[in-house]
Length: 264
Length: 360
Ligand SMILES: Nc1ncnc2c1ncn2[C@@H]1O[C@H](COP(=O)(O)OP(=O)(O)O)[C@@H](O)[C@H]1O
Ligand SMILES: [Mg+2]
Image 1 (cartoon, rainbow over the protein chains, first blue to last red):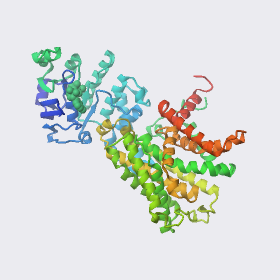
Image 2: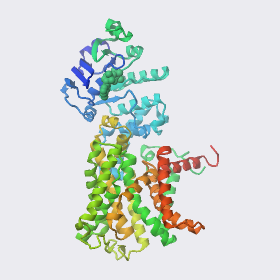
Image 3: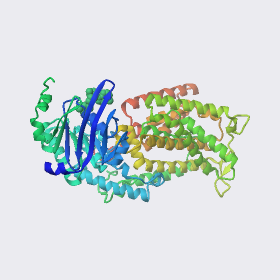
Image 4: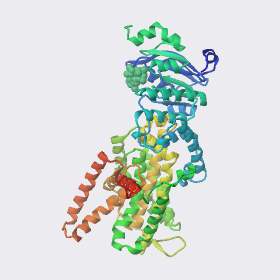
């Protein structure tokens, strides 16, 4: 794991400045700023309804904030569309698994390679020549990911038939297939048993280790957050209430109050 | 015992994603193709004319609609309209440029209906499900209206019908359209179109484009995050689907019917039948498209002529009603219980064959 000093020196990959987002009367995010540095695991925590998922949705272009700005790789990104975020190198998983249910594990992860595949209609009709070669090249990469996540046995299973824990793993695989620079994980361990959680933790750390991917992670389990993350940002009722290394955040009075539900 | 992949290890990804990775499948498909080519020489001309020709012509449209509805999740009630576009386009092209071979024009007519399909597919970016069904229904009614009201389309024939001219196989004197074309030739031409278009469709659906269609169908939000542009994918699906419908319409009129008033031929009734064929055959399945098309074509014939043959007296009108009730009931049943339709039965049969002769 990198030390805090290393990260503090590192380049900022993404920064969020004074972002506010509301749905009608509901203020989901209010003037939140933070940054994510290259190579770190950045946790976003907070009670239910704090605006964590909304924040990820802002980062990958599903929602456009009413105020504030997002800088990614040093470039301002106003009104970014989801596929622009994708081609810019942002991948994510969803709180409620959003896999392609009717497709096999293999096809789901292959779909993650869509942006990297560009052989046109003509060759694809023939499934020959360039189309065949491209398919094989990407299949090879996808098989590496399948090996990495240890899901060889379910390669040809439609994902709708898989248990929840495995679905989460396939979804991680699909995001990894995009070879993202920034990987957003929305509660990757929610609803898992202890063993599955441990596996997932290991995968997340390995991803960072092997691919050097920067990771932003939403998680409820404080133990997991403390183990995995380099820095933590805490949201509550759409506002940022703390930001820093896990040990400091854990001891913060406002954070403890928010988690214990003290009126404020 | 005889049908299994055991012992056939795939040593490369090329062979693993080949069209028919299992040897028994390869042998099976070869046998089916041989049988299909031999069929007109052994089958009665009645069966050819009432079942085989229309089934083959319609299979192409059912595959097309399956690409749109089964693979991409976009419902359409306009497929008969798009078939009509193909038929009229082919008619105009072959009468304006008779020196170009009819086979070329049949294929080209697909591009005309693809263009019309893309146009009427534009609303699909904003609307889904029932609303899209209504929008495509509007397309159907508009096109049907155009087929009747624009006499230029049927060359101002007083009958208002497409009069299919005599056309030959390239470089030969063998008629493929018109009154003198033989059943065998018509059948083999249809078969050739079906084989090629099925092969192309299956290639497309197993590659990047097919995956992007299915991704849009299963979870459009996540599809966008894979960098798939919804508008591009949906319009592409409309284009490919309508292309197939257009070619099917041209084949249907020029080769099977030999002439048609498209105002009545390409009606909403046919649009519904196509949709039922897709659902009965199996959403998102090539084999299913075949099973569905044959089912909806063969069922009325079997009832009308088969039932009297075994001593059950039913009138044509009764048979018609029974057909509609059966198809309707089956569609609803399958929608609720088995969206993979008849194609699922096929898979179960293969599963059983794998274990045979052991029960498990
Ligand atoms: N699409 C939406 N429409 C209306 N309100 C929303 C929408 N998405 C989120 N919200 C509201 O925004 C707030 C933050 O939600 P969310 O970001 O999902 O929280 P978290 O992920 O931290 O639990 C909640 O009050 C939620 O009801
Ligand atoms: Mg959430």
